[in-house]
Image (cartoon, rainbow over all chains, first blue to last red; front, side):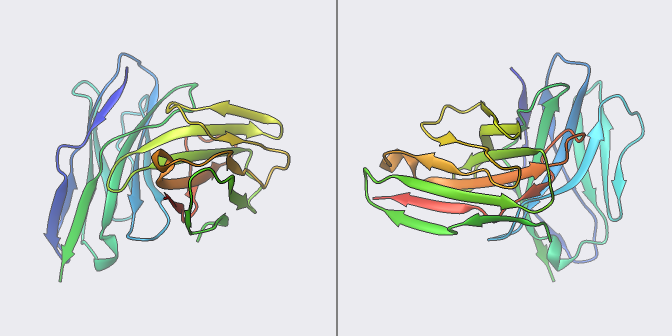
Length: 114
Length: 113
Protein backbone atom coordinates (compact mmCIF):
# COMPACT_ATOMS: atom_id res chain seq x y z
CA UNK A 1 0.00 0.00 0.00
CA UNK A 2 1.11 3.49 -0.74
CA UNK A 3 2.03 5.72 2.18
CA UNK A 4 2.95 9.37 2.47
CA UNK A 5 5.06 10.65 5.34
CA UNK A 6 5.55 14.22 6.47
CA UNK A 7 8.16 14.07 9.18
CA UNK A 8 7.76 17.66 10.37
CA UNK A 9 4.56 18.16 12.37
CA UNK A 10 5.35 21.85 12.78
CA UNK A 11 7.65 24.36 11.12
CA UNK A 12 8.16 28.06 11.55
CA UNK A 13 9.92 30.66 9.46
CA UNK A 14 10.53 34.37 9.57
CA UNK A 15 8.56 36.47 7.16
CA UNK A 16 10.40 36.94 3.84
CA UNK A 17 12.62 33.91 4.48
CA UNK A 18 12.56 30.58 2.68
CA UNK A 19 11.24 27.36 4.18
CA UNK A 20 11.23 23.78 2.93
CA UNK A 21 8.62 21.23 3.94
CA UNK A 22 9.56 17.58 3.61
CA UNK A 23 7.53 14.73 2.17
CA UNK A 24 8.46 11.16 1.38
CA UNK A 25 6.29 8.46 -0.07
CA UNK A 26 6.36 4.77 -0.68
CA UNK A 27 5.05 3.19 -3.85
CA UNK A 28 5.89 0.48 -6.34
CA UNK A 29 4.11 2.34 -9.13
CA UNK A 30 5.97 4.19 -11.86
CA UNK A 31 3.16 6.49 -12.97
CA UNK A 32 1.66 8.71 -10.35
CA UNK A 33 1.00 12.27 -9.27
CA UNK A 34 2.10 14.21 -6.24
CA UNK A 35 0.40 17.22 -4.72
CA UNK A 36 0.82 19.83 -2.05
CA UNK A 37 -2.34 21.25 -0.52
CA UNK A 38 -2.65 24.21 1.82
CA UNK A 39 -5.35 24.38 4.49
CA UNK A 40 -5.47 27.75 6.29
CA UNK A 41 -7.22 27.86 9.66
CA UNK A 42 -10.99 27.69 9.17
CA UNK A 43 -10.62 28.21 5.44
CA UNK A 44 -10.85 26.13 2.33
CA UNK A 45 -8.14 23.69 1.40
CA UNK A 46 -6.56 24.62 -1.88
CA UNK A 47 -4.20 22.93 -4.29
CA UNK A 48 -0.80 24.60 -4.18
CA UNK A 49 1.19 22.62 -6.69
CA UNK A 50 1.10 19.36 -8.62
CA UNK A 51 3.86 17.17 -10.05
CA UNK A 52 3.54 14.39 -12.60
CA UNK A 53 5.99 11.58 -11.88
CA UNK A 54 6.94 11.22 -15.52
CA UNK A 55 8.18 14.81 -15.64
CA UNK A 56 11.75 15.33 -14.58
CA UNK A 57 11.38 19.09 -14.34
CA UNK A 58 10.34 20.31 -10.93
CA UNK A 59 7.00 22.11 -10.82
CA UNK A 60 6.88 25.76 -9.81
CA UNK A 61 4.01 28.11 -9.03
CA UNK A 62 5.20 31.63 -8.26
CA UNK A 63 6.86 31.47 -4.81
CA UNK A 64 6.18 27.75 -4.47
CA UNK A 65 8.44 25.12 -5.97
CA UNK A 66 9.10 21.46 -5.41
CA UNK A 67 12.18 19.29 -5.30
CA UNK A 68 11.04 16.00 -6.78
CA UNK A 69 13.53 13.17 -6.34
CA UNK A 70 11.85 10.13 -7.89
CA UNK A 71 14.53 7.62 -7.01
CA UNK A 72 14.56 8.77 -3.41
CA UNK A 73 10.75 9.04 -3.35
CA UNK A 74 11.01 12.54 -1.98
CA UNK A 75 8.80 15.51 -2.77
CA UNK A 76 9.66 18.60 -0.76
CA UNK A 77 7.94 21.98 -1.03
CA UNK A 78 9.95 25.18 -0.96
CA UNK A 79 8.24 28.45 -0.14
CA UNK A 80 10.30 31.50 -0.99
CA UNK A 81 9.78 34.98 0.43
CA UNK A 82 7.36 33.66 3.05
CA UNK A 83 4.31 35.79 3.71
CA UNK A 84 1.96 35.89 6.67
CA UNK A 85 -0.78 34.47 4.46
CA UNK A 86 1.28 31.32 3.95
CA UNK A 87 0.52 30.22 7.49
CA UNK A 88 -1.50 27.01 7.23
CA UNK A 89 -1.44 23.25 7.43
CA UNK A 90 0.30 21.82 4.40
CA UNK A 91 -0.55 18.35 3.20
CA UNK A 92 1.46 16.27 0.79
CA UNK A 93 -0.59 13.78 -1.23
CA UNK A 94 -0.03 10.95 -3.69
CA UNK A 95 -2.25 9.49 -6.36
CA UNK A 96 -1.36 6.66 -8.67
CA UNK A 97 -2.27 6.82 -12.33
CA UNK A 98 -5.82 5.73 -13.02
CA UNK A 99 -6.96 5.85 -9.41
CA UNK A 100 -9.16 8.37 -7.65
CA UNK A 101 -7.84 7.79 -4.18
CA UNK A 102 -5.49 10.43 -2.83
CA UNK A 103 -3.20 9.29 -0.06
CA UNK A 104 -2.44 12.18 2.27
CA UNK A 105 0.41 12.74 4.64
CA UNK A 106 -0.17 13.77 8.23
CA UNK A 107 0.36 17.44 7.51
CA UNK A 108 2.86 20.10 8.56
CA UNK A 109 1.67 23.17 10.42
CA UNK A 110 3.59 26.19 9.14
CA UNK A 111 3.84 29.34 11.23
CA UNK A 112 5.13 32.59 9.79
CA UNK A 113 6.81 34.88 12.30
CA UNK A 114 6.54 38.60 11.53
CA UNK B 1 -12.10 31.77 -4.47
CA UNK B 2 -13.48 28.40 -5.54
CA UNK B 3 -17.19 28.06 -6.24
CA UNK B 4 -17.87 25.05 -4.09
CA UNK B 5 -20.21 25.35 -1.15
CA UNK B 6 -20.95 23.17 1.82
CA UNK B 7 -23.78 23.51 4.28
CA UNK B 8 -24.02 23.52 7.17
CA UNK B 9 -20.59 24.71 8.35
CA UNK B 10 -21.22 23.36 11.82
CA UNK B 11 -23.74 20.84 13.08
CA UNK B 12 -24.26 19.49 16.56
CA UNK B 13 -26.96 16.86 16.75
CA UNK B 14 -28.08 13.90 18.81
CA UNK B 15 -27.48 10.24 18.21
CA UNK B 16 -29.85 8.46 15.86
CA UNK B 17 -30.77 11.45 13.73
CA UNK B 18 -30.69 11.37 9.95
CA UNK B 19 -28.24 13.94 8.58
CA UNK B 20 -27.60 15.24 5.09
CA UNK B 21 -24.51 17.30 4.38
CA UNK B 22 -24.91 19.43 1.29
CA UNK B 23 -22.25 20.13 -1.31
CA UNK B 24 -22.70 22.17 -4.47
CA UNK B 25 -20.32 23.47 -7.10
CA UNK B 26 -20.99 25.88 -9.90
CA UNK B 27 -17.95 25.09 -12.03
CA UNK B 28 -19.49 22.23 -13.98
CA UNK B 29 -16.89 19.80 -12.71
CA UNK B 30 -17.56 16.13 -13.42
CA UNK B 31 -15.57 14.72 -10.51
CA UNK B 32 -16.61 15.29 -6.94
CA UNK B 33 -15.27 13.88 -3.70
CA UNK B 34 -16.06 13.56 -0.02
CA UNK B 35 -13.22 13.41 2.48
CA UNK B 36 -13.28 12.86 6.21
CA UNK B 37 -10.73 14.65 8.35
CA UNK B 38 -10.24 14.41 12.09
CA UNK B 39 -8.69 17.51 13.72
CA UNK B 40 -5.06 17.96 12.77
CA UNK B 41 -5.02 14.73 10.82
CA UNK B 42 -4.83 13.71 7.19
CA UNK B 43 -7.80 13.46 4.87
CA UNK B 44 -9.37 10.16 3.94
CA UNK B 45 -11.49 9.65 0.84
CA UNK B 46 -14.91 8.22 1.68
CA UNK B 47 -16.86 8.73 -1.56
CA UNK B 48 -16.31 9.99 -5.08
CA UNK B 49 -18.24 10.48 -8.26
CA UNK B 50 -17.19 10.63 -11.90
CA UNK B 51 -20.43 12.27 -12.96
CA UNK B 52 -24.20 12.04 -12.79
CA UNK B 53 -25.46 8.68 -11.49
CA UNK B 54 -21.88 7.58 -10.77
CA UNK B 55 -20.76 7.05 -7.18
CA UNK B 56 -18.01 4.94 -5.67
CA UNK B 57 -16.83 4.23 -2.15
CA UNK B 58 -13.45 5.53 -1.22
CA UNK B 59 -10.59 4.24 0.82
CA UNK B 60 -12.03 4.76 4.28
CA UNK B 61 -15.04 2.68 5.17
CA UNK B 62 -17.97 4.91 5.93
CA UNK B 63 -21.56 4.30 6.92
CA UNK B 64 -22.59 7.31 4.89
CA UNK B 65 -24.15 7.25 1.44
CA UNK B 66 -24.03 9.72 -1.42
CA UNK B 67 -26.01 10.52 -4.53
CA UNK B 68 -25.26 12.39 -7.74
CA UNK B 69 -28.49 13.22 -9.50
CA UNK B 70 -27.21 16.54 -10.82
CA UNK B 71 -23.72 17.54 -11.85
CA UNK B 72 -23.56 20.40 -9.40
CA UNK B 73 -24.90 18.60 -6.34
CA UNK B 74 -23.27 15.80 -4.29
CA UNK B 75 -24.97 15.35 -0.92
CA UNK B 76 -23.79 12.97 1.78
CA UNK B 77 -26.27 11.27 4.09
CA UNK B 78 -25.96 9.54 7.43
CA UNK B 79 -29.13 7.57 8.12
CA UNK B 80 -28.54 7.27 11.85
CA UNK B 81 -25.80 9.41 13.31
CA UNK B 82 -23.48 8.04 16.00
CA UNK B 83 -20.75 9.68 18.10
CA UNK B 84 -18.15 7.86 15.99
CA UNK B 85 -19.29 9.99 13.03
CA UNK B 86 -17.99 13.12 14.73
CA UNK B 87 -15.46 14.62 12.33
CA UNK B 88 -14.97 17.21 9.65
CA UNK B 89 -16.31 16.39 6.21
CA UNK B 90 -14.77 18.08 3.18
CA UNK B 91 -16.29 18.14 -0.27
CA UNK B 92 -14.08 18.69 -3.31
CA UNK B 93 -14.30 18.78 -7.08
CA UNK B 94 -12.07 18.72 -10.12
CA UNK B 95 -12.27 19.04 -13.86
CA UNK B 96 -12.60 15.77 -15.73
CA UNK B 97 -9.12 15.61 -17.16
CA UNK B 98 -7.16 16.53 -14.07
CA UNK B 99 -5.66 13.97 -11.71
CA UNK B 100 -6.75 15.27 -8.35
CA UNK B 101 -9.22 17.48 -6.51
CA UNK B 102 -8.60 21.13 -7.19
CA UNK B 103 -11.22 22.88 -5.16
CA UNK B 104 -12.43 22.16 -1.68
CA UNK B 105 -15.41 23.46 0.22
CA UNK B 106 -15.14 25.03 3.66
CA UNK B 107 -16.07 21.75 5.27
CA UNK B 108 -18.78 20.71 7.70
CA UNK B 109 -17.75 20.15 11.31
CA UNK B 110 -20.10 17.49 12.60
CA UNK B 111 -20.50 16.66 16.27
CA UNK B 112 -22.76 13.84 17.34
CA UNK B 113 -23.75 13.88 20.98
